[in-house]
Image (cartoon, rainbow, N blue to C red; front, side, top):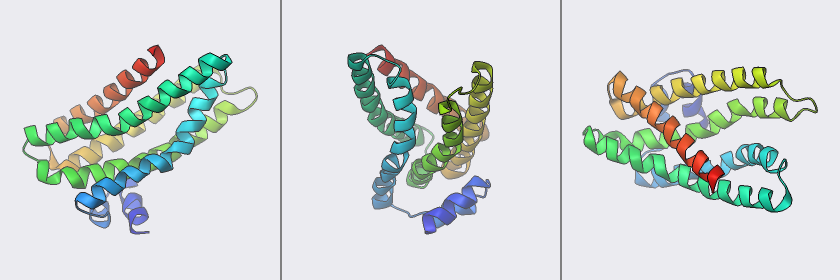
Length: 180
């Protein structure tokens, strides 16, 4: 329940939300349970793409995307650890990553209506889908910037760079999975 209150505060760009989240190394490791909570929404998005493929291609796609999902959940925290060390803000690393990991659940819930709308029989027009996707990515970028800025306590430009790196890393991992 405390995690929910912390996340609620963070959704309002309230730094006090960090204080409501669990702290320390064990809370950091437990925050990866968020990956399990995000799994249904991620699975829905991947199912939509895999179902359009032939049986073997769909199975291959699903396997490659599953591996990419795990890699994505591990790659950014490792990169953020290196950046935290580089900028000498590593004492804030757990605070940041705990919020970052749990906030992924919030972001999945924000994406869910768009996924459900796209699953409707006629779906969304490609233009409208692209517009909503761009808007959702902008929202995600803003939250990622805020979490890095206030969680790691870095300069605004460093937080922006981390948000861009997070986006690009996810894009690279996804593209590698598609090419696999």
